[in-house]
Amino acid sequence: MSFLKSCVAASALAIALAAPAYAEVTLNVAYDADPVSLDPYEQLSGGTLQLSHMTFDPLVRWTQDLQFEPRLATEWEQVDDTTMRFKLREGVKFHSGNEMTAKDFVWTFDRVKESPDFKGIFAPFTGITAVDDYTIEVKTAEPYPLVLHTMTYMFPMDSAFYEGTTEDGKDKSEIVKHGDSFASRNISGTGPFTVTAREQGVKVEFERNPNYWDTESKGNVDHIVLTPIKEDPTRVAALLSGDVDFIAPVPPTDLKRIEDAEGVNLITMPGTRIITFQMNQNRVEAFKDPKVRLAIDYAVNNAGIVDRIMRGFATVGAQASPEGYAGYSADITPRFDVEKAKALMAEAGYADGFSITMLAPNNRYVNDDKIAQAVASMLSQINIKVDLQTMPKAQYWPAFDERAADMMMIGWHSDTEDSANFHQFLTACPNPDNGNGQYNSGNYCNPEADALMDKANAETDPEARAKMLQDLEKILYDEAAFIPLHWQDLAWGAKAGMNADEIVNQLDFPYFGDLVVSE
Image (cartoon, rainbow, N blue to C red; front, side, top):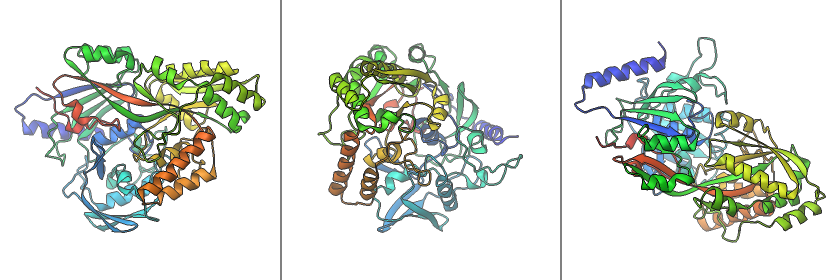
């Protein structure tokens, strides 16, 4: 019997023996897409992180007001400038029944350092050591102000479960992006739910973990059925008809419709995910010229996209850092001047333009395909002919990793709620050894900008660090390292009678384990 099936049987037996006197609660959720893998460290994406918070637990996690709260760590202290000590929660069991101890954190850290997507986040760290079974020390190469921020991404894996080899001799712990691995198909976390069934692109089913450690949580959902519904109208209709209980995202065109409907609630909040396009300098010679990149930036009407396509439900962007982040600068403002764009193209020797290919997802970001169509149309005004193709995210991410087009869309929410993270992943010089530039499909590279990021990451004085990060944003803006469009606002639709507003957050992964559904 497979682990997934045995886990289902064990959970069903435990629930039957408990003989609850209440009706079991099933939550039907519709997202625009489902997770591409069960491996928490295969792909750095919103879908992966949502799955991780449902089936694993982090060392610490963010609250709605962006403070840190204990999860698998009960307390922590700074031992010296480069060491932080965490006390671990005792008595926590993985879904397999194995007990969680410090060795699982050590094992997970070693595995994370091999992940192409996650190694960059953990690059400042030299290691995790086990002081005893329930104490770990996290060490950095030099003083680092974002230790706790990063530990929100430390989801310990069940080392005993993932060690060894499969029946066909493959390493169970291997990380295979967009491939078939043991970890992409099997899961054993500490989280509030187990995965009981999964069919990629069709549905994922979850069942409450009967041995979950967090007995103080008021969450009462027993089963979750996650169904991907790519089409916005179909997803909204499913909520309004009662076929599903919770949807995300709510498209801007239907915000008022859901707000006015009876029996459902609309939940919104400002977002910090920047939507961008990158220009691949390795594929298109013209993109190496800053004047051409600036021309493209001047040709794109960010405000028009926010007004007409996003219906005002976004904030026009000109930099990666949103207001409130250390690197945000009010002096950096959006560009839009088609005549200026034409002049820059002429100065660069491209008055007659050229042809490019463009790729974008059609179910990852709000109105992503419509935004791509608008940008392609705007570029035609400066004689850049665009061959645009859009596709579901399950196909898009492999194409993105292949850098399969000249311009590609990428949205990014800072993994550490900090400005440096945007540059590290989106515009830093690509380096497979340390993970920098992992999502830099434009192959932009400026060593001065990278040096500023490294210096900021070792600076513990907030004002000095903010100045460095603002200088970094100015470099990227002056060189048009990428095309910033807008920060995407967040919207969820939920059946009335749930405390859905209490489990959502700016990070856009609701804590379903704490969801209370009224009977």
